[in-house]
Image (cartoon, rainbow, N blue to C red; front, side, top):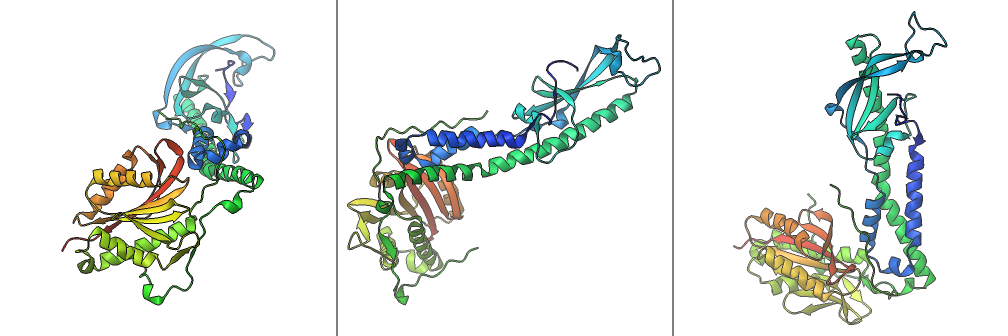
Length: 414
């Protein structure tokens, strides 16, 4: 090929320097954000935006789609193999046939220039042409097998080196979320400490230590790329909001889950109960397990089906207990919850009792319909098949995030 567009494949710059530059840019961008932005932005959305921006699209060489083209080129005599008529110092050129191998690829072209952390002591002059990695073989001998052998050797080495680069990039991408999350949290904690806010965070709720044995809960048996936009913050200043500790939230959900599993194990006892009766039974187990110093009664009732946890006249946890009545009713229940909760990082639960014989279809409907809600932010995880965790936001402000757990229980009608 012998022109100015060629480069030495996998041999021009260390991949660790590319990754190092990325990490430095991430830190610079996070540190450039104002205190107002860091303290008010939806943390998960900001992290996802940075992950999307700074992840590296890996190289994908499509060896199975390779093809060849041919052309003629003037080759200087000095580049010929050792032939009898070659003479040192002679400047003649001779026209020879050239077979160009094209390997289509996707991903970041820069990676073709990078030296992987594990490498072969080998390189090759290549060029990029029409989204293909190309190399040339000059037909000096009119020997097709010799050309095939040379080409296969080059392709084998390219594939080995590309796999090494892919491993390096995959390792970087796999830890990117955690690395960015750590930096964002460190930046946030810096502002918290600066403003002496740490002591004013958290709802003062603790687990009751002397829970009577009569209230013991049976343990359940465990059996084209879209770019993420940068989150926008419209709030000015930061007011610390009381938040329910994650560990307490998980204990509340676990208690509800264990009681619900008891309903499933004894359908003849609970199938005739209405929503309010089942809600009251859940409260029977919740109330003695947690006590609050902010209010005399930690858990409160609102309407017919709600379980509330209040702090300073505001709701920081709410659960809605509903019989399954289809997707429309399910989405309406989420809207209700989001209307009740206004605190940043509030937490909620939808407790669904299903009398449907085909319980699996109910679970699938929940999984399908939850992302269709206009306030949906993302799926978090599954604690198990019937315990799904999601992220939503209140109306009009995607930075005011609500955590919503959906717990489903099968209580078939008698």
